[in-house]
Length: 247
Image 1 (cartoon, one colour):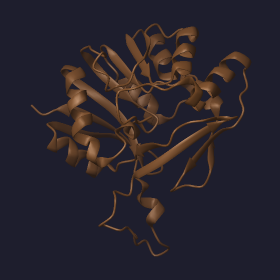
Image 2 (cartoon, rainbow, N blue to C red; image 1 turned 180 degrees about the vertical axis):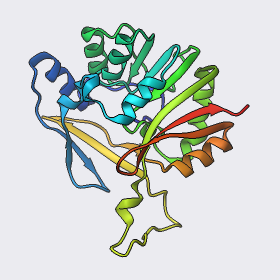
Image 3 (cartoon, helix red, strand yellow; image 1 turned 90 degrees about the vertical axis):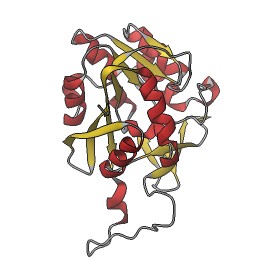
Image 4 (cartoon, rainbow, N blue to C red; image 1 turned 120 degrees about the vertical axis):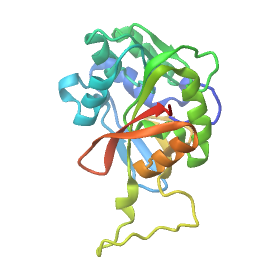
């Protein structure tokens, strides 16, 4: 979840964390509702956040296969990727801004689960792999935040390190029946979305989330001293990218 500063969430405004905590405790959870100005109301199946490795998609499995060395799992949620990597013998630090999610991760066996924002300078380290999955580009928030994102990643990456990040190209939402695309080129980038979540009576604050097409990601990577490689394409406009420093 994108935050404009380096803060974490208050438990009173942590709907996803509350849903994760309920499911971990009871094996069931209510509806985790998602609202947006771009999409119709939707919901996140909470059990999906606890999936085992054999339930993960190809992009996720490819990212896990490519994760080497010391790994930073950003926006780790319930910790499914961190746990899968631990089972493979990989050293993982899992971070999230949700206090309830971090407690569940710790209780479920994630060895290094931290309540911290990616941009909090107290987060230090030299990571060989930085992992951002489940539309991980979302934490960038807006295109204008790309320089800040790459500057922070640069601080945390070890020499020769990599960022593995998935995203989706929302261009399909703007295609007409004839295959043309209706986008206001003078407006905001079409992949900038705002979301708000609600679980039972717990409402979160509205936050920005960025879906970015690979060409745009590669352009901004190059502008900020990085190279972008398309590792794998998904079945519906989604993809996995690897970001590395320019030599």
